[in-house]
Length: 346
Ligand code: LMR
Image 1: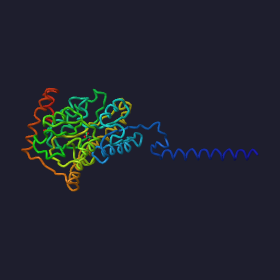
Image 2: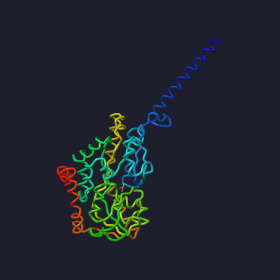
Image 3: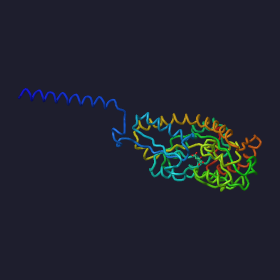
Image 4: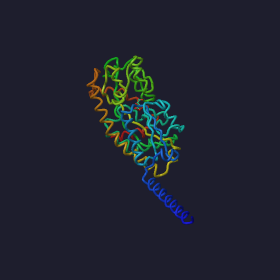
């Protein structure tokens, strides 16, 4: 009987040791998985934006999410909400500041309400080409603009590019400043952009991005300005008759996080996020150019919209019409700041 008890005890002990070591070995082989570990340790970044998924910003947001997943082995998960499904235009920055979401990437224009210095980036014809934009994004003036967001309880992370804006209308070709007279244009809410249309004797109407197609379709508005990828992805070219390749302004994004959330991350988590962002910024810089070029070809091939390219002389007429905007920026944020940004973009 005694021998039987000892054999049983020994067998049970061996069995327990075997089970524990197999379990330990198995758990060592597992990557972080929220279904096995539970959600308690996982960090979620909710990233809201207003454009379609197949746009430079939409694709960049997803690329960033994938990189973060990989770099943190799944510890940090970025959930991307496109097309304004979570928060529409005009609400996303407030939602970020409140901490309801952790990340957004609004256009420069949408930042101007919070940080007036950002108006400088909305000046028409400030940039002539992508290299100049890049110089500002990566130089000390770009750093200064990003740091200004910190004063407003936002953690400025980086810039993302989209591209140069073009003009369109259903009323007629937009070649000289006089062609704008009396027409109504959808604009992003921002002083510089609104003044730009007032100077052309047109009527700017601030509207959320996701209402533009409908307003143009029912001809509540005559025209709009945006990048080719935004015009293409929302089908705006289908409800417009004339497109002017004017490259008159630059549309880029401020990538921002909620500052309290940022502070809760460890130094190594912040490093992983910054590294994912650096990779994504480089990628979007090239990819946005490719998309704008390819989608312009798509528009040419698949629609009857009339495309006009401004000559140097016509561009000069537009520049002259916009001169007062430079004066007003100089007055509001200082000649020195304006000079510094002009220098940096040269
Ligand atoms: C807009 O026109 O509101 C867009 O430019 C939005 C965006 O984020 O690109």
